[in-house]
Amino acid sequence: MGVSKVLRKISSRGAKCAAVIVAAGSAKRMQGTDKIMTELCGEPLILHTLRAFQQSEDIQEIILVTREDLLTPLSELCVSKKLSKLKKICKGGDTRAASVQAGLDQVSDTCGFVAIHDGARPLVSQTVIHDAVRKAAKFNAAAPAIPVKDTIKEVHGGLVESTPDRSALYAVQTPQVFAIDLYRAALDRAIAEKQEITDDCSAAERYGLRVVITPGSDENLKVTTPTDLILAEALLKRRSEA
Image (cartoon, rainbow, N blue to C red):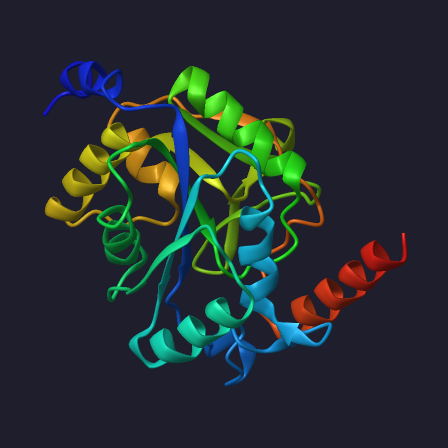
């Protein structure tokens, strides 16, 4: 289905936005520690992520996508913490694209937009969520990003081949927000064509969607290494003391 045909379907849905939280990855770079369940200021990291969307006025429901071995522990955690917006916890796939697709399948028909977020970004702010959702409602696709600070080198075979213009480079974060029918069509095509999806925007871009950039935050870091965890804990403690 082409973009124009999918656009005609959007008007039949409302402006409600669901959040699909993707937490189905392994912990290879965390030296064997399960980053989703590891404690961050005394509570599982994923709980901080879920609370951000629970508290957001722009989000009407939450879908959590995770590994099979975490389905029961996370279900018990969410019930005990009374996360009322949580609609479903479902099993992810072997790839990020497959996990996102599994989450999209659980979104209510009344939601016209979806915010796809990394479960390992526990410090996402209400402002970052709001800005991305509002821009997507207007332009169909939006994502937070921050300008790249370091000089980037393109390297092949251990040799520097070029230095891209840093002023045009941005580090894209999540949540990445899309008109759900458009993104579902884009993702289905990417999976069918066996395209490598490095982030959610890449599928949308290949489908012809223009993604609008919204302000990201240095604090909206993705916990990938033990060092990231130390930094996230320090930032969270600073917030609680403010």
